[in-house]
Length: 473
Image (tube, rainbow, N blue to C red; front, side, top):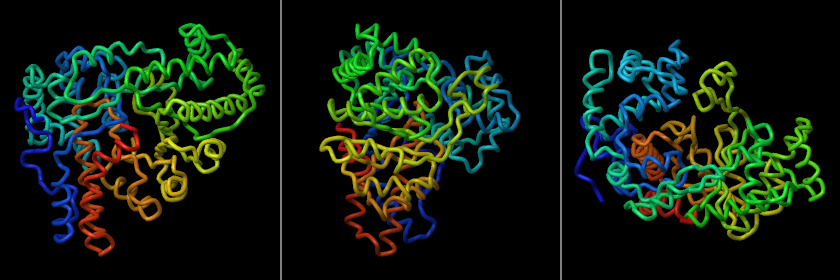
């Protein structure tokens, strides 16, 4: 259903309607027709970070800087690299005047030429606010005021935007101890689409996480479970069941290393006591993390939650930045990964189990063709996660399709995942993926490698039916 209180997010004034489509005329014509089939299809977003409270409270967004800049580390990190203090951008709770933040970004907008983040911002301004004017020093105040004026209207509150963006499914990411009251409240005052919680237990599974010991004791306390490894597993299972009762369909795991190890119950108990006592060495900590990732797969086999693994990011690379601004402030860096060896113990036990779904996301492009596509091309349980984080950009999406399709086809993918907290960028990101996929499919048709009818079927499938199947929606 389309809400008439604001611009259509797919109609961007004065923007090239064929943007991101192939330059070759014949191929572009095919791509345009494929894109038109799916341009206004409902958005299925089974992994993201929009807080549920935004939709529950339905309060106006505070200001353009808070909405579009301060929490978008794609933008703040590049400005930081160019010498701008993150404090001057309001990062990490820093007190900065929002209009000054906006002006500072506008003054440096030339830095974003050719970047995905620059493209998304321009798409959000054009599609979300009807602003096609270029962002620069002279236009900064005018654009800021126009965005602010719209944000103060009912049509730009979260629930109205949810409806206008045609969101059919939106998943949040939630702490295992969350009571999920917000999701329960939304269930009583439903939106046109579904909003689902996602179980994210990282800080309860990784002994190197800040506050791990107290986190585990809090988990045991809320479930009245004993401080044994069996009790710990029972507590995690109980919280997963709590999430399932509130509509969850997946459990998400963010790990630096996709490493698993299968331990005996006795070995696991000994290791659990060592990490709780903080006497475990680095090798033991790694094995505990690896065994818990395997245990999470075992639980997904038992309770049906789709298991997603986002691997290959070294978090908080800059210690001074972490100390000053906290985590998730733009200094997480991709690293190499080894899925084939690292996940073999997990797949030896569960890879062939019917009904188990494991979706693998990477930021190391080399693993797409070398490991992830071959894994998904054999194991019925393994699906290829869409380009994520540093790779959810037009050229990277094309490289992803080239790297995975010849081995695993289209059916073994997850469908696009926007993985964003920037609410206004959701339609822009999905539109980017739809254009990139239309271009890739069109090239196969133009080269005689794919029938047009098959390309049309695949284009339709990617945006809705496929993510529904993979995430059991």
